Length: 495
Image (tube, rainbow, N blue to C red; front, top):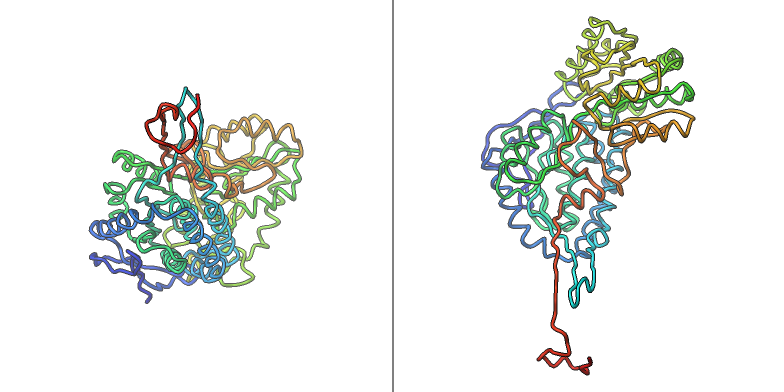
């Protein structure tokens, strides 16, 4: 059994708590290790180490910080296969998905490498006679990141590089289901030359989370997860005076207009709906088929389902792996019975794979004739269950999207540029794809939804990430006129 400990002040640490949690291989169902759960006292020790490191790290020149980030970038790239294998072993996603996750994380590391440019302030000279104004951005102190099981390398790399580049020390509380990637990142940060305590990892459950949310030395909290937990994170941390960005759940729609390329839309629906077993906050979970396109589109999706190879993430031919736990698999599978009882049509039932003796597998599921009041539509299923809602018109599709409480991502498939432009303006969603099924912004933009998908003001990574992990100070200066100064400045005095 592998034992996963914390990473505090540059070294692995067991902490005072004797509580642990199991780690499973989702492809076999076997327990492969256990992870330490931090007590409140363990969190206090971690934060104390991070606070001590901050006093030195904030004074490190930008060029030196950038050099460490470049070294970290090279180390992550060189260890990308090792990181991907750790992700697959604990999350279950296929290796190609895991490798793609690491690459997306690398994009954010590369953005943070440019921190000397990102932290440039502003200057206005002579705003009044002899008066100048300039701005400077300062780090916050100790900042915390609480990250989910579905992207155990990428989401920490959304947060930590920007936070560290800005001069903060960063405490990561990863999902207890997938802890190994965080520990690998900690070792790589140390190898890159990051001073001890600037990057810290504490594992655990709600006890560790709640202590981070209330700790007086933690200045800001970043979170990615479900909406109920995001709401708790936001309310608790903000109530204790902290800056918070809490990304919640999603119900991402793909609107397919009658003029769309049906085969292209079906390919997109399958890849976006079933990739990573649907355990993505940007997965497409609802296809809104407009008018006459519905029948041909459903037929095209069905024709592709038998070609999806489901298997262990280490199988090079597998395209979809298992879900992360048995309990989660069973919860997702239960939506099929509920959908049928409420009047929907289960076109494809992937539960045959769930009867296997080992592994947390569920095959691709497709549910047609779904209505907005149905449970399978209202809930964030977070699994390989794709719903089809048939709507009569473009306006009905936009209304469907806007009436949903979530506002993370949405896609539209059409050949009509005017309709696409109108769509991007009308939908109340934070990230929009036009003929792109998963509109995840590149690193030089920022990631975040609207409505119940985001609690807080600033989005994740990119320019918003820099603003989140710093605070601005405006300095107004007036100096005596040199001609009246009593100090010999060494140059002729003129009027």
